[in-house]
Image (cartoon, rainbow, N blue to C red):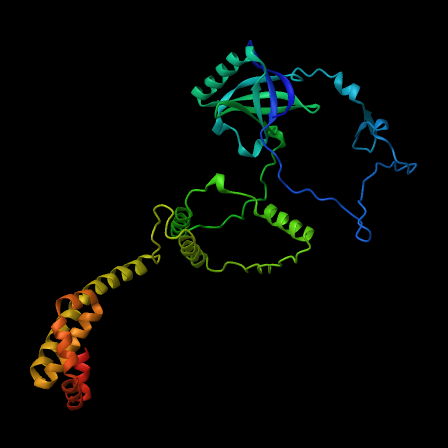
Length: 367
């Protein structure tokens, strides 16, 4: 890993020589601009607006434009003459809990490496002190010509530094929040919790840039002269009218996409006291329904058995055995082979019984 800055960490009277390396990298695909007619590359040139002549980099300097339009040149020599105590030093100002740093302030991330063998011991000392305290160090440092604010923390076995925006660079969120008067019901929060539980934890290591992969496939297809597959863009949906219905649909979709997994998932029930009471009553009725049905069914079958003559009784017995065979084929095959054989030998009796029986009797028998 190539270092972009060499200096030291000032920890009280302890000085720790360190090297600074970028902890992140940009994987975005870069594009050029070309002339559509001939494919020539488009380049930008620095042109003076007064004489319309191109100006080389050696003849350009920085300048500050005042509020009244006055331009004040500021050279690199001017900036180098300014007192900047943090030019080569990461000056630790103090320590705070990590929760005291607003994530809005986080900027670029860097790794700090001990620069040389003598720096290993004080480097490890600061690292372990940060780890044991559970705090982060707030420091000032200078990079690319200006002083910056930073936060030092432990990442695995190294000290990482995050560039921070200065507090006065964070805008107040005035006019950003929804207008007053918006109320969120407990029922909606319950469904939102159910959706969060269904989606589960995010696997940060599995996340990747789908758009970048699509662009790479597009470029590869065009380079190979292959046709580019076009996907129809989804039409944007309208405004969500029923928030509860949208949340319930989201929970169902999340359950299906996770294959029924994803941790403990809250059941979604109709909301409201009346609806909840009705649901409980319906559940009790559904539970009692099989018992009542069994009680009603038993006398009907018994009565049908008494009224039916011998031929009809012979018909009902194979019918019952056939129903038993459908419900449990393996059991019927192992335990009642003789019954199946007898039924197979006497198709005429079954046919005669079927002719003699009335339509009503058949209904009772099949029931």
